Image (cartoon, rainbow, N blue to C red):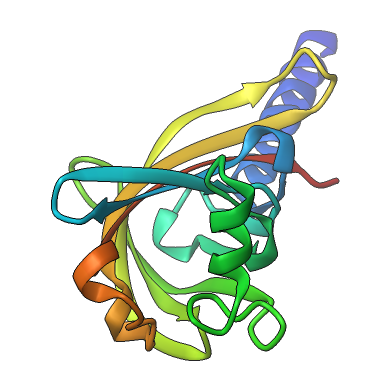
Amino acid sequence: MIVRRIVLALVCLLLTIASTDAQPTKFVLDNTHTSVVFGIGHLGLSYTYGRFNKVSGEFTLDNSDLTKSMFKVSIDTASVDTNDPKRDEHLRTPEFFDVAKFPAMEFVSSSVVKTDKGLDVKGNMTIHGVTKEITIPIVKVGEGNSPFGDYRAGFLTQFAIKRSEYEMKNLLNVVGDDVSITFSFEGIKQQ
């Protein structure tokens, strides 16, 4: 009788753990472990790279059905950093990001499809006041407990956009149109 109760208690415990794991889990981006790096051609001779230092957002993971996951990211355009203060100030002007009028770039997912290599995340990308639907490939780098006493998940995506499609057409013959983007992000599980 005691053995049966112990077995029943263990089964109940395992079912509770399984149902908890099946619930969608919300994560908030950890800006200190998130990087947005971009590269763009210069005069057709080389590439210039930069980053955005302020990124916020969240994502929801449903590990039992990844297609029910969601990603939302906001990038502070004034935080552009190309290791050249004069160029960064120029990039903040109306000739490029126009940060006074458009203080953020945003991506909000609308659907997630599981692939052999990870996820294809479709959503709306808004830059410079223009919203376009794009699909970006995302790969989960890892998930688990951290030494900081919390639970984290991290992803990586690499894709390209044309800045002219977002009405950023200034100096296309000098700076180039194709922008490569590498976005590595880590989120902290919310209780």
